[in-house]
Length: 419
Image 1 (tube, rainbow, N blue to C red):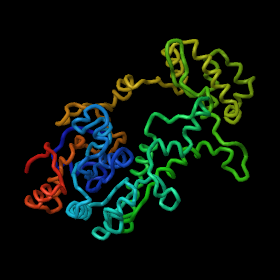
Image 2 (image 1 turned 30 degrees about the vertical axis):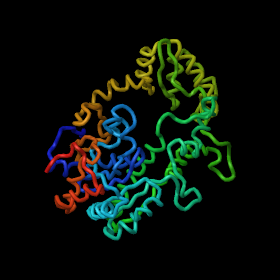
Image 3 (image 1 turned 120 degrees about the vertical axis):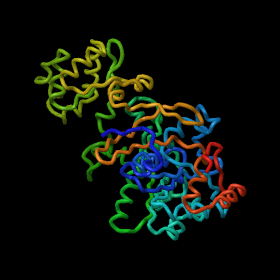
């Protein structure tokens, strides 16, 4: 059931996981695209990362950037191979098209105009491979006025209204979530879109172009919860799901720390009121009568919970709430998350050796497959580590590879294995 990170040979590596046999040409960089293609690679797809001679910018972010293997890059590029091609050169473009001819998916996240300048549009790629799934992860739908605009996580957070929502809930100035939430969320959605497009091709026999725009993907994140009374026409209320916007919705201080807990059902609230010595409120205070009433008064009820939780320690409340079957969780820090007991039970964190930099921490593939588990692990690649290997696979001989490298249309890593 669980994934197995043991090293495997090349033959087995090509046959493990539910996406074994799928080849993805990964022309993405930074975070959104690489997170999508890593999810495909984790499930067995052969993901070939096509990089410029400068490499993915995330290679140079953070510690170890001198080796071009920074932590952000390491977190989104495992189980991939790296080939360096200068797509602005005719020889580099020709090599890319030869590679695309062998592929199932081409994924990119530059603006479509850049793909046009490279003469690598859907029509260009489909001309050599009509079955290709050609997926663009873009800032905005190409049918609207924002089509040509660039997009970054902060920009999309702003445009979807996330900072304004945080200002309401926190009674503070607008701010961004300290997480690349748009990049990672859209990458995860694109992973599902790509898998769906592959399924559609199995049914129809033909490939297609698919655009995955960040802005339009993220707007439902906000409006799914916060359109609320404005969902109806005419409106039946205001914007904003009160439970989520409540200023008292936060980790609760205890005598010695913080705790997370959620009372949601009638029984949760009844049990909590008894535990906190306020059991009579369950029958006498109409705010606790049902979910509708609780939602209307949720900020005040969360404040009531907060006052009660200050009376005992975190350990005491964890034991009491767990025994009452009320959802409860520690409030982890980055450091304590790495020692979470449940994650340790399942071996979620492990250490892996990367030849160019040493030992790194890895996380498990989160899905657990009972029939086709992905068992292989390939460390994140050095820049151009697999250039020669991949070029050989698509028919280039050694003299042709040497010529591409001599003309700087391709590049090999110093760490690349020799034939």
